[in-house]
Image 1 (cartoon, rainbow, N blue to C red):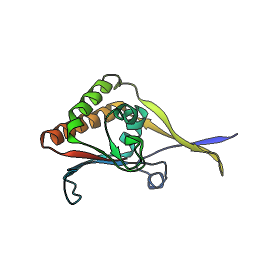
Image 2: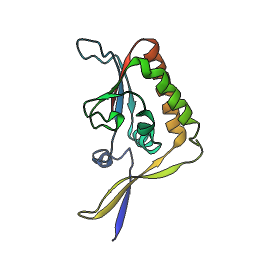
Image 3: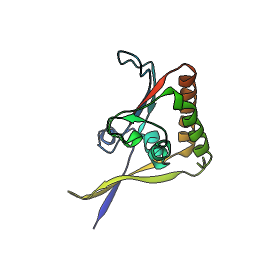
Image 4: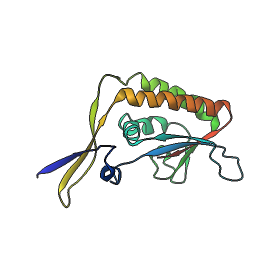
Length: 156
């Protein structure tokens, strides 16, 4: 089988329109609000979204009591919610996982593939230093959310 590959380029509009090109958002909310309101958000661009899954954060964080319609936590295709009472533990889990990420070790990862109409592998370069900078910002976002009594909504 002859397989071609596409190295995802964030600056290429055609790549951003591919279904394999995924982004996400984490919203600061209050579960007890009568009306849905987002107080603040942090974005996961396509690079950090891919790194989040590559470094296995959904599986590691699914030890926390996420609420989701599908009951699959962060592995859901729907939104997942985390109550304020779990945010400190979430930050601890992220801090522990960060220790095993080598900021010097750039990687090329497979995002997915298709075999019809032609074989194509979709790959992406990962910059762990860039992802670690995102995780630092995320941990700050989580700490502020915890201190201010907010819950989190994950749109992955």
